[in-house]
Length: 71
Image (tube, rainbow, N blue to C red; front, side, top):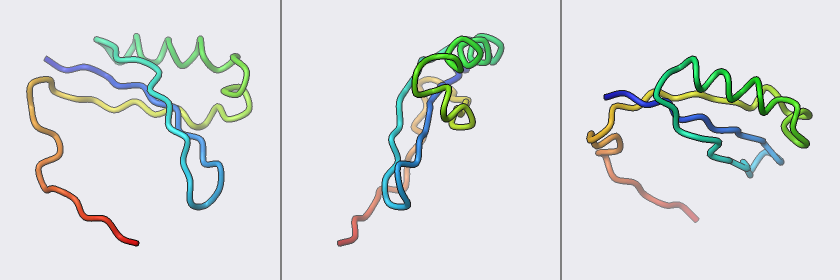
């Protein structure tokens, strides 16, 4: 089964992103309808290009390579 994750990403400056998970939808059409509804809300109306929809298969590992940190 595939789901569609809707996020809004606002770059506050070059080093910081403010990411909001808006919802998880069963169809791309439902995710796009949520974007239409959200574009007029305070804050989102000033950054309407920050919406992003990603498709995910459920019950699958999506990050399998680990990670490192830098200081």
